[in-house]
Length: 72
Image (cartoon, rainbow, N blue to C red; front, side, top):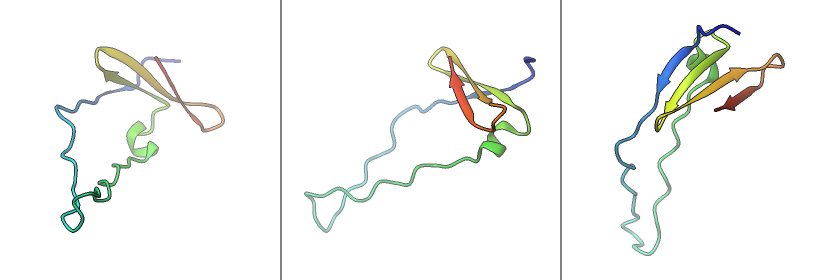
């Protein structure tokens, strides 16, 4: 497999603020929806990309069967 994959760096400086329910202070409001990214958009036509996370590199690959595998 060639090393022509895309390099993606993910980082978050601080966690998002937690929502609260003003009608019932004892209950939390529904969480903000998780951001979704299609694998096609993320991989941009490639079969592999490298994700840098906290000083380590992770490889996201598409298998022959079309499944995703993440390895360190």
